[in-house]
Length: 370
Ligand SMILES: [Zn+2]
Image (cartoon, rainbow, N blue to C red; front, top):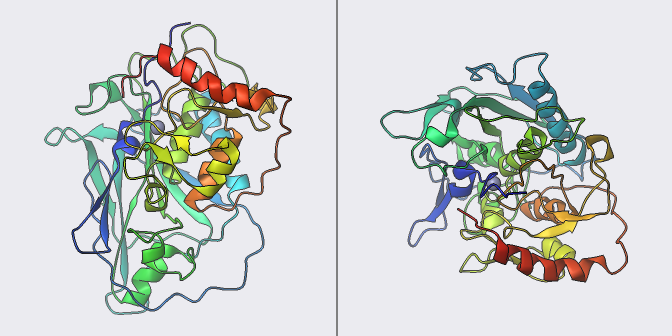
């Protein structure tokens, strides 16, 4: 079966850039829409409550910008989105404090993101949007979803099936307020520096956006059956793009664990899972194409647990196949900063080392466009 080159590449997420200002610990986190986070200075820590009990995250999928109705109520596309989101809701157990305007005169929160259904004709990028006086409840994130002709978008990989990235937080006001809003209580100090910049070792978000290519695609949208023929599998793409929303290849904590050349990922959970530094796709936003690991329990979605399969967070998807999260993918999310009490999958006999060798054989045969 022909491999669709870089099919699942998320040009937005994959090119979400982390740039550093010379001489400053602060950095700009920028998505494709070139939203900027104002530099936030070191301030008092948000006091952290005692260790939170494990609890589920709540994802609010927002359809306000689903201009084509790709995820309309009652569709299989909506079901696939909810099914993919359910894994993250169930398994990411960190506690996130609420976001909203603060007590200070100037304490206000603006959320910035990209329109998942519309390109800006001037910039050629997804249109920049922002919501002033943004608020969201504790343990909740909001993800704006939509669909557009991603292949027609300038600057995007011509085989892009989907894009996803966290939104940009832009709180204004006191340093205490900004620290609290950016960190949402995550990070050892509850400071924005724990989340953004060269010292970041954890991740938090208000939410983000996710867009699916809706032109010329014969999507397999049913999450409960497997794709056939040359169909791209929506459930697989949604699992992947949600990973980008939750920091895979898009967060400071992720990029801070790459080697300088961004060719190897050094996060401890990922290294333990893979058995070595993890080889990366160019740019460091994905595992190297063809990287394999053991599947988690997604039997309900047609994939058995404990099988050595291509990871969900490598950059491509084989048409007519389904990918689910693997142990390495989950380890990557843990290295981003998420607490994930997923039950380990038994290691099949002699499977793992063979898999590592297989990675390089397979990579050599594949034409990866991005
Ligand atoms: Zn991607």
